[in-house]
Image 1 (cartoon, rainbow, N blue to C red):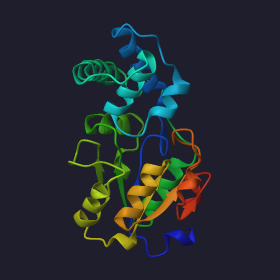
Image 2: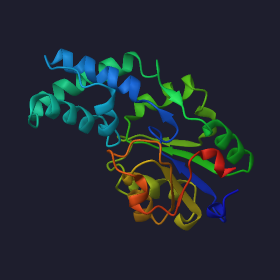
Image 3: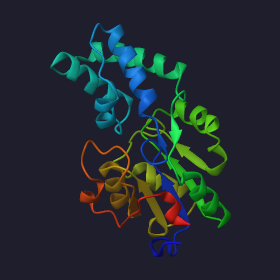
Image 4: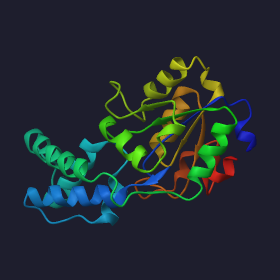
Amino acid sequence: MLPLLDDIRLIAFDLDGTLIDSVPDLAAAVDAMLEDMACPPAGEAKVRDWVGNGSHLLVSRALADARGGEPDGQTLARAHAHFLSHYRAAPCARTRVFPGVREALEGLSARGLVLALITNKPAAFIDPILEALALRDYFQLTLGGDSLPEKKPHPAPLLHLATHFDIAPQHCLMVGDSRHDIEAGKRAGFRTLAVPYGYNHGEPVATSAPDGLVESLQELV
């Protein structure tokens, strides 16, 4: 096990870009939403740089790119409803688990560590995706972007986890692929670990100065 895990009792994982590559399904839903809004498709490459801050901001970024300006509230609400409808219909058609993830979750669970999930994805999508990918049983608690009043990079979801399991933040680790994961971890007093293969708005996640970085989560075990 990595030295970074010394005295760690709880590990919180991000989902999209850390455990799973969900962009193909997200991009399909975004493009379907854009078609509903009489806009040209965005494509996977653009969507890959837009994910990570929740579905409202994803839809807002897509509309702003297609229309050349920020959408008003009514337009955003209508587009967001279209997006959720399309994504709900097929949230896991082409989504895949990154290499090394299953091995890491299996090994960490076997060592008795508490594993949790903190994502900015709406909570309603978490269990269907985890069940479809046979990952649900690894996590003792999952939090979505709408589970609490605040979401990452705010530290509140992480501190909620620590309080829920009665584990001090210094014995907790946040694992993610973006600057928002690292910022949330630091603000909560967690140790932080990053993976470089995910979605970080086109920036190297190393620039956020995580406590550690691994090419594959399998390095955790």
